[in-house]
Amino acid sequence: MATEGLRVENPESVEALTREAEALKAKLAEEKAKLNDVDNQLWSAFVIAGVRSGEDGKMLIWDAFTTNKEHAVTMPTTWVMACSYGPSGSVVACGGLDNKCTIYPLSMDEDPATKKKAVATHTSYLSCCSFTCSDHQILTGSGDSTCALWDVESSQLIQSFHGHAGDVMSIDLSPTETGNIFLSGGCDKVAMVWDMRTGECVQMFEGHESDINCVRFYPSGDAFATGSDDATCRLFDLRADREVNCYRKESIIFGCNAVDFSVSGM
Image 1 (cartoon, rainbow, N blue to C red):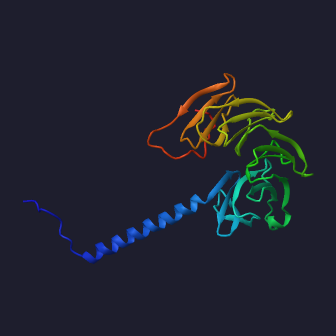
Image 2 (cartoon, rainbow, N blue to C red):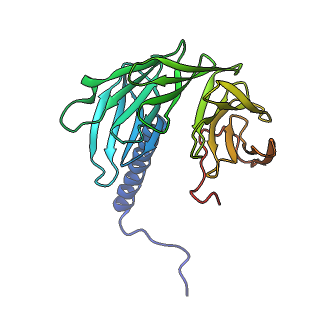
Image 3 (tube, rainbow, N blue to C red):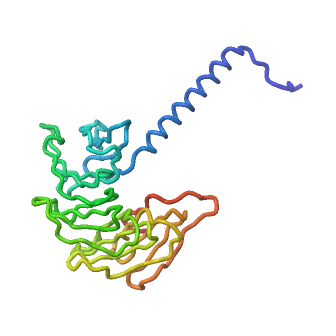
């Protein structure tokens, strides 16, 4: 005859396991909170993250193979919002609420902070940055509603891009060989395609109902995706000059902060 229930031989053991489970839940919540403070991360031979920690912003760089932390650089701003690796892998750019984009050379023999160089200055926070096809030029986007192309060596402005009616939140360079086209999205709900040679907007795409937080080119460069605070991702075709798909799910009520494609685009 089957028993009607389980008899607990050692109630103290059950209580100990319960306490351990609660402690693990608390630890997990703590680690998730730390991840929420990571504003930006990029991969190269190393992985880099901009982290707000206490009163000091930090740029943390780990070796992606050994998982060792190679650098922890104190930033001049309490909130690091943008970072980008140079194509050579020997420099990294960061910025945020200081309104500046600062370049740090990566050397294992010296502290990167001692060789830092501010190469770009906006009139509002720096929201995004991206090196072009070399370490010599960098694109920036800002809360002042502009994007800008800068010469790293001279810290001189090469070209400015005006057209957004709100904060620029994200930029992405076209993956095509010429590399003269880039994409931007912002708080005006608009995605814009720019020609770096002329400074002109060559295409404009609407459709989102709230801020665009992220933009990313399709691997072929013929399309791009956007993510927005309206809890949708959208796919736009440059050749058709229109939106071709909208991705949404009723159970998702929070905004999208990052989008990306697989290498194949499938």
